[in-house]
Length: 319
Image 1 (cartoon, rainbow, N blue to C red):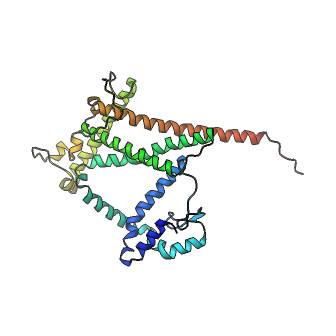
Image 2 (image 1 turned 120 degrees about the vertical axis):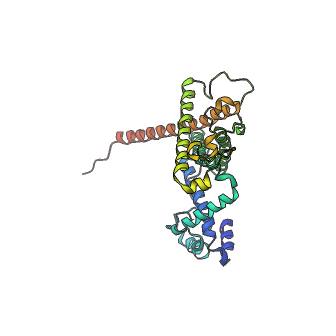
Image 3 (image 1 turned 90 degrees about the vertical axis):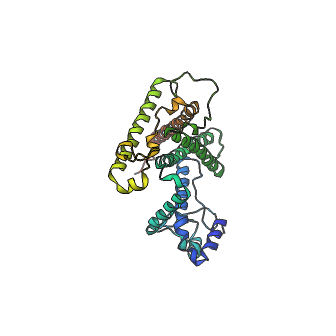
C-alpha cells in the first residue's frame, strides 16, 4: 500500500483520534486536490490520478468527498473499511473545521486581529500568485512539448511552481506591508544601484498613473470598510479597534485599524526596493495573462483548423 495510506491506517486504529482526524485533515486534503486540479488545467501536472491505495492509474473517485481516487472496486472496498470511512469528509464537519482552524490561527498569530487588513490582503494574493505561476509554467511546458517533444510535466514542475509561488508571495507580502506604512519590508529583488529616472515602477507614464489611481482607490476602499466597522458593530469596536499612541479612542473619526490609518499610496515612489518589487510582480502577472490569452488563441486555431480539415473530406456515399 501507499505510505500515506499506511499512515492513515495507523492513525485511525486509535479510536480517540477518529473524530479529530477528519476535522483537521479534510481541509488540507481539499486544498491539495484543488491545487492539483488547477495545475492540471494549466498543463503543469499530468492529466491522470493515482489510486489512493496502490498508486496505479485511477478510474473513479469517492462520490461523497470527491477527493479519494481508486483503480478498482477492490481497492475502494479495502480502503473504505480500513481508513476512508473514518476520514471521508462530510458537509456537516465543515463548520467544525472552520472553528478549529480559526482558533488555531488566532493562537498562532497573535497580531492577526490588530493587523487584519495586512494578513487578509496577503492571503488574497496567495491564490493569485499560484495561478499566475501555474499559467507561466504550464505555458512553458506546453510550448516545449509541442516544439521539441520534451514532456517536463510532473512532480518536479509542480514543486517548482510551489517554490516560485512561495517566493512571489513573500515579495507581495513585503509590498502589502509597505503599502500599509512599513516600506522597509520591501525585498528589492531586482533593484538596481543606479537611481531611477522614471516617476514610478513602469517605463511609460500612463501605467504609472493607472497604478497610482489604483492605489488611491484601494485606500478609499479600506477606509470605507474601516469606518463602517468602527461606527456600527460594538463587538468590532470592543475587540478589533485599536486606539492611537496618544490614547485617542474616537474610532468614528480616526478609524478602527492601525494599518489602515498608516496607508501610504506613494510608498513605491519613496523606496527604491518597493518600486523594483512592484515592477517585477506586475510583470509576472501580465506575463501570466498573456500566456493564458495565447493558449486560448492557439486552442481556437486548432479547433478551426480541425473543423476545416474534416469539412474538406469527402463523405462516403450511402444508399
